[in-house]
Image 1 (cartoon, rainbow, N blue to C red):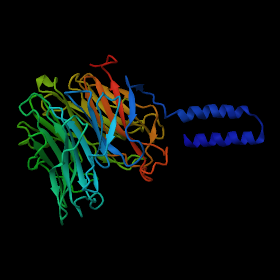
Image 2: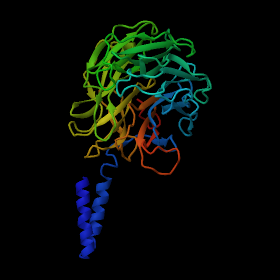
Image 3: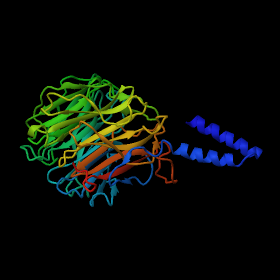
Image 4: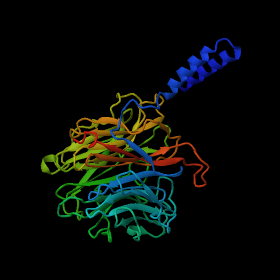
Length: 476
């Protein structure tokens, strides 16, 4: 496409220089305008009731966002992103947003890998890692400096975060200390026996291996249990494939906690029936391609699994959904599998993105949220189907209302962006409640100002997309 556009421009300029025909320029301009628009305007249907808001006022090193909706007051929504561990909140269902850096810890050089959740009392929680300096590239356990996993609490639904961060695990700098990475926060908002519990799982990298550790809080995040290992098999000690990574969790209507991660060749699954005290042996349940993979124009990408649950499905136990992305079809696609028997068996993988198979377009950085009210499964991901060169991406919302058998694809934004080989994160985020869906993602954007806070190397912003399927008559 770029070669064709350049050739046409040169042809038109030659015609103008010789003064032969001015109409050639008009024809070329018309053709080029259409060609330039190709790959920018998406061919996918627009999200019902779509709104898109930019949270960050300027470009910088902003990525890896997470979002949560308050189940007790759906007007309250919080978004977290890095770096450092920052918060944005709305108290009016997304009409107005306020951003704050009050959650960035002052006693560590770096904080990030954020996730957010609301508990059943309407309190908001932010989980993040903090450290001074990474270890050896991709081998974080070697030369690791002091680091840990921390949780902060907001008693008023995300408006203020004055409470002191509580360490889930923390290490002082010393030879051979591990590095704690990629935590994810889960809240039990059911009516089950462990309602109100909070759970955090993450990867611990040591010099010799990687394992999944887990901790729980039964007192509103004030204290956390001593971490336990829940990965039966250890992974490799590197962060670029073969590690056990990508912990996420979901709670069933009876309080059972279901969790997944990746081990390099499988989605690994386990569960706890006693509020996180003990877990069944973990096992690979879904074969996948390696979770880290290279795609053009992005610093790095992964396809870690995400688990969520429809509490009304699965004959009362809940219908489990797991989504991930991999390159089994050559280009990267997003996939979904479901289980109606508490994770014992899983359905064949369903391809979530609706573009033609083997078309060379990548879909990546998916995240999943099943609406606990409507049962609809919602995914957000980057999508390059409209760019023949597989560079420019739009943000797509895929939605299933038939228990994961099929997915309808919508576009949240019509203007595509080029990642320019920047680091746009390891994940996106999505939350859904009562037909209203909030997606959060990172975009690479060109400089629009000379703001002194803008990074010369990193040019990303964080955006929130809002969809209203209830108002559009698509709630189920």
